[in-house]
Amino acid sequence: MKQQIISEVIQQMLPHLDNAQIHQLQKVLENALFGCEITTQTVKKDADDNPKLIDAFVSAKRVEGCSEKTLKYYRTTIETMVDSIGKGIRHIQTEDLRSYLTDYQSRKHSSRVTIDNIRRILSSFFSWLEDEDYILKSPVRRIHKVKTATNIKETYTDEDLEKMRDNCTELRDLAVIDMLASTGMRIGEMVLLNKADINFNERECVVFGKGDKERIVYFDARTKIHLQNYIDSRNDNNPALFVTLRAPHERIKIGGIESRLREMGKQLDIAKVHPHKFRRTLATMAIDKGMPIEQLQQLLGHKRIDTTLQYAMVKQSNVKLAHKKYIG
Image (cartoon, rainbow, N blue to C red; front, side, top):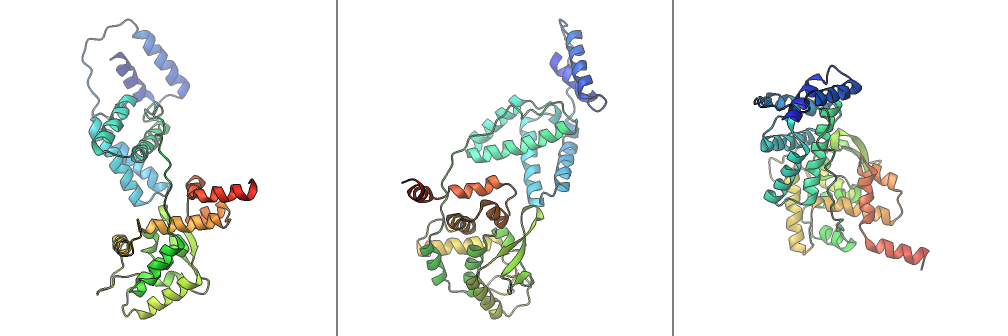
C-alpha cells in the first residue's frame, strides 16, 4: 500500500518536476514512510481518464500517418486489455499485463505471432504514455519479445500460374491474376485502383499502401494486353479498374477476389490460393534473379527492410544452389 501511495504522488507530480527531482522525491517519500504502518484504506483512483488517454494516443498515431484501419486495431487492442484488467491505465503493472497475455492466449488459443503483436501495440502505447509524462515507467519494458517459429512460406510455381491463366473463363479474372503476379501489390491496393490510374505507355501505376504512402508499381507486357482487353470489353461507366461481373458492376471488394481465387484453387487442385501468395511469389522470383534487397523493399512498399528480408528465406533451394556455385 505504501508503494501505491508513493506511485500516486509521483504520478501527480510528473508534469511539474524533471527526472532528477522525481527521483529525489521518490527517495524522500520512501525514507519518510519507512517503518510506518498504513491502516487507512486508500481510495482507488478513478479510471475515468482511461478513454482520454487512449484517445490521445490514437490521435498521436493519426498525426504520425497511421491508417484508419491500423488506428482501429490499436484502439480495440488497448480497450480490450483495459476492460479485462479492470484498472486505471496509470496503475497497470507488469504482472497485470503478463497475466492478461497468458489468459488471452489460453482463452483464444492464439498463436505466438498474435500475442507478440498485442505485446508490441501495448509497448507502443505505454512507451508513449511514458514519453508524454503520464506514467513514470512503461510496465511493458520487462515483457520481452515473444519467440516465434520461422515458417517457410509457400509460393506459386510457374506451372501453378499458367494453370490459373489457362483456366480463366473471364477476362477480368485473367487481368487480376496477371496484375497481382507482375506487380506484387497488396490486394487492398489493387481494389482501390481506377482505370485512370493506369499508365499503359510506361506500364506502371501509382498505388497507396499502408499509411496512405504512395509508390509506383510496374507490370509486364502480358499484363498490359490482358488489362486492355478487359477494359475494352466493359460497357459500364464505373471508374474502378476492377468491378463485379454482374450489374450494376460495382467496384470489387477484397472478399470478392479472395473468394474467386479460393474457388479456382479448389478446381485446379492448387494449395492455398490467395492474393498475398502472388506478392510473395514475385518477391521470391526477384531475389532468385539477383534483385538488390533495397530495390525489392521499395517495390513492395515495406517500411522496414527486416520485413523484406523475410522473403529472402523462402526457398531452401536458393541456399543449396549458392553453396554449389560458391563452395562445392
